Amino acid sequence: AYGFWYFEQKKYHQAIEVLQYSFREPIHAFKSKSLLIRSWFELWLSQETYFDLLLTQLESFEKYTRRDRALTSKLKTAFVKFILFTKKILNAARDKKLMKAIQSEIQREPNLVLKKWLLEKCEQQ
Image (cartoon, rainbow, N blue to C red; front, top):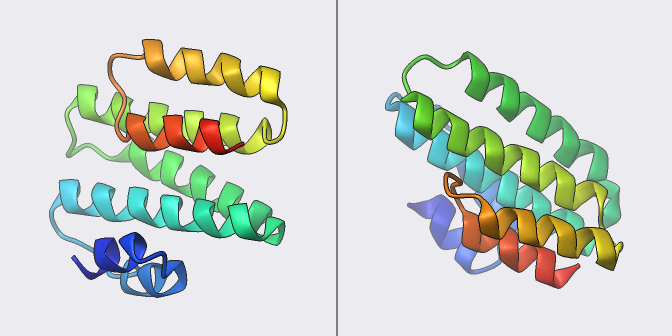
C-alpha cells in the first residue's frame, strides 16, 4: 500500500525503497514488481541516465514472469505483454510516428495489464 501511496504522490524513490520487500502471494509480487517498473520509468522520464537501470529491471522482471509457475497462463501473458510494450515505448522514445504505431498496437491488445498507463506514456512521448 505504501508503494502505491508514494507512487501516486510522485515520490518514486520512496516507492522503490518500500517495493524492495518480497511478497509471498504471487499476485502481490507481480503488482509490486510492475509498480517498481513504473516507478523506474517515471524516474527515467525526468532523467535519462536511468535508461540502463530501467532496461535491466524490465529484463529481470520478464525472466521472473516467464519462469513463475504460480500465475495462470493468461495472467502471465498479460504481464509479459506489459513488459514488452514498456520496452517498446522506452526504445521508441521521441519518435512520434513509431509511438503512434505502438499506441495503436496497445489499444488493439485484449489481454494486457496496465493498459491505461501504457497509453498515457505513449501520449507523453
